Length: 99
Image (cartoon, rainbow, N blue to C red; front, side):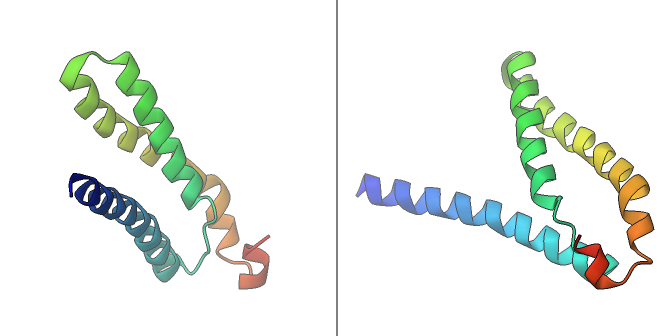
């Protein structure tokens, strides 16, 4: 029974992560009408930065600090990509946005 509950909780955690990525893609496309294929890369970059910060910062503060700092760092990188890469693409037809 314990294994079944562990599998259910693991499935819910994985579904929650996929839901966050899918809802982010849907929100970005709905607002900007640009398909941002880098969205998954930013998600993975946030996980990597968070893990690296968690290893560098000590104790429980390291875990929560890594979550906050990883979000801020990836957010700043996302703003830079938005300004430098995506804004020129907004004026292009949708077919050219996929390239």
